[in-house]
Length: 160
Length: 160
Image 1 (cartoon, rainbow over the protein chains, first blue to last red):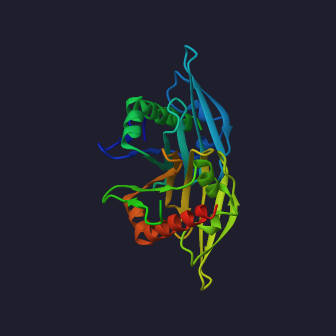
Image 2: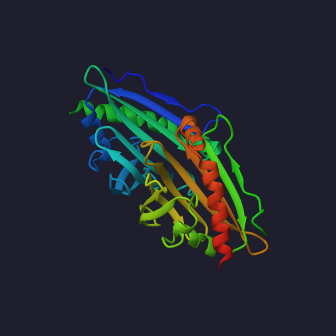
Image 3: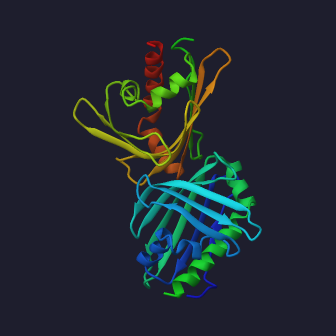
């Protein structure tokens, strides 16, 4: 497996969803940890030019999360939500809200499935309340951010 | 306004949503309270033949909720989720999971808008992760349950 491994991002026209997927050369427990460890998330979550600060991360039913990203000019972008479910090494389901567009909330599940060769298939499925909110998220650069995030996560996992 | 006032329930074929709406002859603060008061919810939430017990109700960002309904034969149906947001007298956004179909989670917003004549327009917008899960919820009797719930809520509000 190499960094050329496929990243899939799908947002069908007229639907309310964004689906993504990527396979990693590390077991589910290791990949899962990168999603719930406040030390690791800033190393891969979104584009590298943004500095990510973990203000809250409570990975359990009812737990809150709040991440803040700062760009080189000092502009701040906050993201927040609550965890509906965290099943260790298997699935996270949380709500997601960009504080720059308050009130537009999505529900996302992140699944970690073991592959036959000891890797992990990560699949994300986000549903938005409206097609317009889904489209706005894509227009705002979600696709490139998710793509770079996956690439950075792959690099992090290959470091052990 | 009478109990003949229209109840709207919409679940367009092939989409992931259930939308409902009804106008009540009581101000938003009063109607909102019926949604977050553990004493009032059992008096109107769902069909009257079920006994609803409030196991958890924490109406704030990150708060949990867990309601249990028991039928006359002793069968138990649990529902649970977390609150993403609670804006007093305006909007509740929460996740929703029927424990009989674990892992099928929806995100629902409940809006309370004042009407010109002092009443409240309640609108709910629920998005499901899949069309199949949405359809299963409708097939399971959600529509009649929501309709009877609205009728019971109207009766409760008319009691003052």
